[in-house]
Image 1 (cartoon, rainbow, N blue to C red):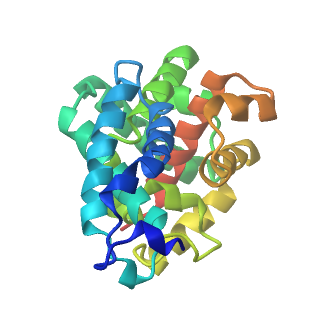
Image 2: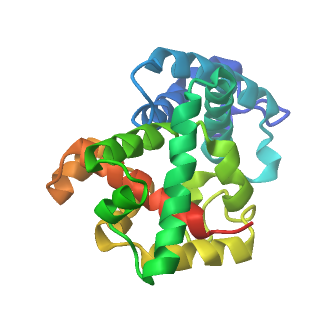
Length: 238
């Protein structure tokens, strides 16, 4: 740790805050790939910068965490708060998202196995193209329906695929029982969906990069990502 970055109270010197701007940009880019194009990257960056400055005021080196470990969840939290405050998702889309989650749960009970997208679309009485469009809309809404997911998963959706380690900053927050439920549901996912979650949340690849790895389109990655999350949501109980 570079002690020159801190003043006598253990607070980062404000003249050095610019070296941490990359933390804001990294988190903004991660969120941007899940959001509709109407959400400007610059808007996320501006909110993130404010979150960074506020974090600098609150950081205490005596607590033992590095500044990056302390700052990242707070920068992301500031962006999420801004997104949730906009409430941009249409009511009809919200209903479709709930219908998909319900359909997956019902079909798994009826079939005794994991339903594919054609079976889910048929259950919903939707053309497959319309169902896949709903998945894309749902994927874009994952961040803004954060509160609903938070009730089941804890403090951060990213933790859903980190079920094997305790070295992430959210592990102490997520209830052990819920973490076990999540781990079991991830293990039951179709292999491609499981791979997408691992590449997205653990390896931090974006949707385009995952598409290249799996040799599928970026939109198909987005659909499968959304479907995987819905499978987990349909089974994990608070």
